[in-house]
Length: 221
Image (tube, rainbow, N blue to C red):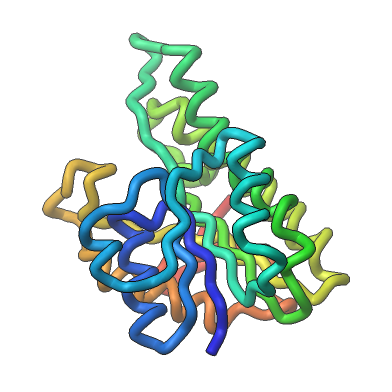
């Protein structure tokens, strides 16, 4: 049995990660601000009241974990806010950077003592963070924050390789979640997470730092 920590665990992709990992027999630590009834029903360990944009909250989470070794850390928490050129909101841009890019890096730094050789670090990003793939413009805050997260993931893969820790940079696909208003063209969280876990299972130090779609497609930067 391995121990996985999942952020943004109360709904959507994070909740489904918790469900499928638990079904596999793994120990799950679900991190969120407010647990949902669906998360509570799983019976996994829940660490609630955690705002990952606050340094004090991250320190408190680390204290709660009490040095527990982690085999996998899935940094899934994120936010998507509309920021067009016509309605550019600097506060929204900053907020999306704080949640989508800075918070994952802050938590990774805080959890380093609990990561060991063969641990896996997973950054949940988006193909909207691909510069080559941007053909529609807009979404400034989300796109820019995910580019920053992708760069952080690339640096982490380099810095953590000597420690034996592999890093996955993963796009879940278009998934029917609240974040995209349950877009009917999206795939189910179940299908997405099955693919994501396959990518995590296949993660090694040799392919660490790669940018993957849940379906196994290698994505352009």
